[in-house]
Length: 405
Image 1 (tube, helix red, strand yellow):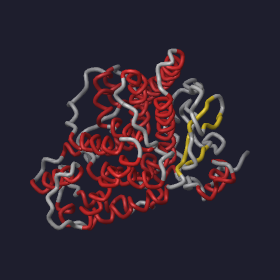
Image 2 (tube, helix red, strand yellow; image 1 turned 90 degrees about the vertical axis):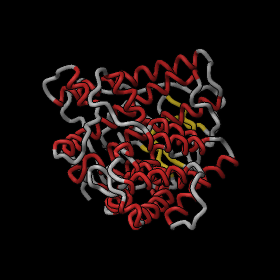
Image 3 (cartoon, one colour; image 1 turned 30 degrees about the vertical axis):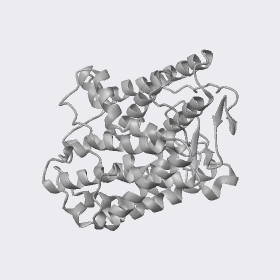
Image 4 (tube, one colour; image 1 turned 135 degrees about the horizontal axis):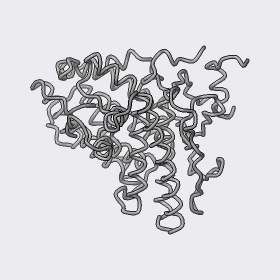
């Protein structure tokens, strides 16, 4: 019998030796699909980008757009659960810079008096949310998200993207903010600052750093691309999105809402910003591909987070259970949660088949520019990174998924 994997053995196999000094060490492995039928297995997604993409490297059957800012990971070689056919997983070399600014922001949010007085309907203050994140080991925080989803960003862009994720963490479920004037004032003041409408009165350290990150996005846009303003705009949209319906009558209605609730437009803007692109995300040529990617992100997030969300809902710690597994079980009158998970996972695998078909269609029709193909490849890397984060984060599986030291 083989010995159980350890943190050392997993990380040694995760990347080539030349990249070991840059690895953000993996300490958790969450196999969130253990109870589904074994015949549901992913198939490798294969496609080749059009010739002409610079700085590409071959991996399996695909050519990936890459930069020196990141390196490739191999979760299968490391023995990690890998419930997808997507095969390009990259890690930023600048993850420490991202965690540094996110820790600085979290500390300022936790100490800010106005933030601590802003209490959500569930009784939690925004300051306590920041304090809770700070109680988690830095490398295991949600702010590590950018490390795998936007790996090709240079160091300056990685810092800004990591900062924006802190704002997502703090102001998530902003539609719940109806409990008091303090909460509304804090939220509206934050949104005004994002949009450059804040008054010129003396700023707190927190307000000054928020303004600095907004200025940073604009400065990056002046250098290359125009994604910085889109990140800001989509972040504002996310903070303003409406509450969910009491229940969804169709799976299509749910996935349409979940696209917004999961912050997919914001994530796509971050991908664009990370590669200094000025591609038009709303282009009709990309519409079907990005809709499929949106569904994939939503399905993966829901499958990975279901157990945690269901416990919180059953214990009265949240007011809504917004999850594909719940919707599928209810709409199809399925007898168990595991059968609903199996169907949701089958949907994810079908989406991957359709993604491969859409990639082939776009290639055969020669319908994309080289810059659009670069964006498509970065989106696929983001999508694989989302799966990887779901597997290696303590956020969903908790301490029970910790790898032996």
